Amino acid sequence: MNMVNITVSVPIEMKKKMDEFAIINWSEVARGAFTEQISKLELLKKLTTKSKATDKDIQGITAKIREGVWKRHEEKK
Image 1 (spheres, helix red, strand yellow):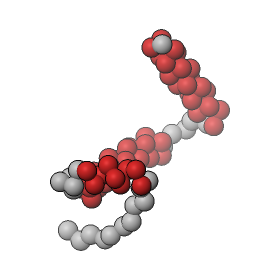
Image 2: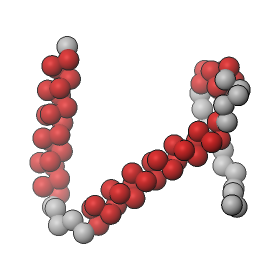
Image 3: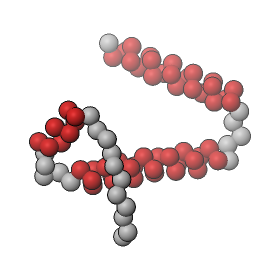
């Protein structure tokens, strides 16, 4: 498999913590995270490509989701 190198910036504190676990292949962890995010985005693209929902429809759905999340958050208190 051909690969290219990329640079990822992390905060200093995170790098210190990563250094504590030098046995971990952090490049593999990053590849896994990238792969997972790409899969989610590809699914989202597939689901929305043929969508006929309007901006107003999306705003309504978004409002309902936020309301549900807020209610669950409040119930946990």
